[in-house]
Image (tube, rainbow, N blue to C red; front, side, top):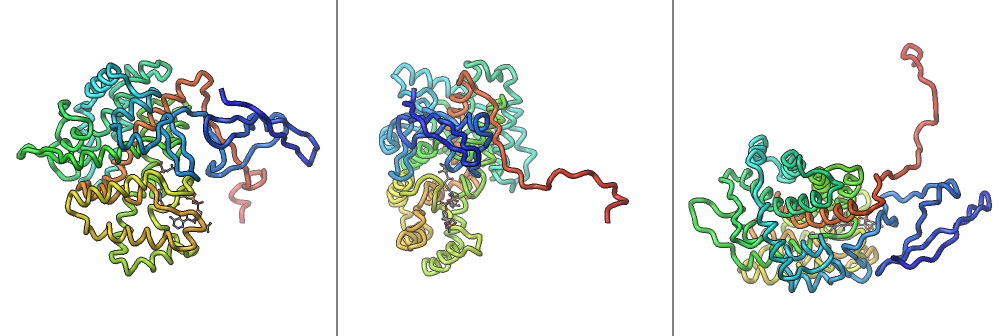
Length: 433
Ligand code: SDX
């Protein structure tokens, strides 16, 4: 249990005071528990965007924004990126510990059992136009998953929750690959459970019946890293959506669909697609100063995509790892002179020397380089955020499982400050001028 002390809040209008408990976590900033504020002092708190509000107690992920630290269940992201696999990280995030050999064997077997999707679910894709954005299809297909599993949707049943988690992790790659195939008009490739998790995804994405396909080990390694780095990230916008949706007792697939929808935004997971569009729009390093000026201009809505973070006020540790993988991958794929990579490096250098970015602690985030790796892996631009969603699905479902497992779990219900019209009476239309 977190260590406890208190802070005193005094209402200067009435002189009334209140002792608020202070909760200390294992790491991080202590929090003031203000649950009794309304009952004792008659106030709500106001914190648009929840930038200084803790919405829950969690044991899954810890971020130190100033120190650039990211831990999954206490393990530093750098160690997991170097030594683990995405599926092992899924086990760790879901259950809190690294699996023993027996647990690993059982877990991997269970995931393999759930890689296929219901045939009727595959037919949903026919309803989408060829040019439909993959994230629009993923929102639809993820939510539709709930219509195939009526028998295991009791969110109060731990085994149903665990089964749903297996299905989400196992089926997201299949849904992503089917969405891609729909877009390019190629036959769907079913999962091949002899392959590893990432090899299986690449095979479903890029193999065609007419030719032999062997996933490139360099691509497998790069994609494994990407998925590990995107797996979870505390209470970001999409995870908070999943938690709030789940707090009403909604089924897990509907909650994950909400997470997918939230991630789509360019200020969140949609940034990896927006970064590449921005780099192509810049087109040439000599145009960079013009875009830097636009990013600084308060009258211009343009922001430097891939820069800044609500929490990291130092380098995003994931960006460091992805930047290194970028170099290695582009060298190995002999694509290091990729123009957009050169522009990205120039942009990063110029921005990090500019007072506007330094003073606001705007560093490259995970999305700045991830698009370059995905481009090098021949993943189409419109699929970038789907890849983010695929990696993050384990974080969403782990956070949902944690919340649903809490004995005192209740529906979330933020308050507001009302600044609309004061109470007034209805006027018949003939009396309105
Ligand atoms: C992700 O929360 C998570 O954990 C998210 C994520 C995850 O793993 O789930 O890490 C994934 O979403 C990463 C972020 C991807 N988004 C982008 O790269 C889009 C570009 N970045 C921004 O839109 C912005 O930086 C945010 C949304 C990420 C953060 O927005 P904030 O919290 O409003 O930024 P801030 O308060 O730190 O801004 C401080 C100042 C402001 O200017 P002033 O009012 O002080 O003059 O910096 C400016 C902002 O206008 N600013 C930028 C900028 N980001 C912030 N100016 C130019 N370009 C930018 N990118």
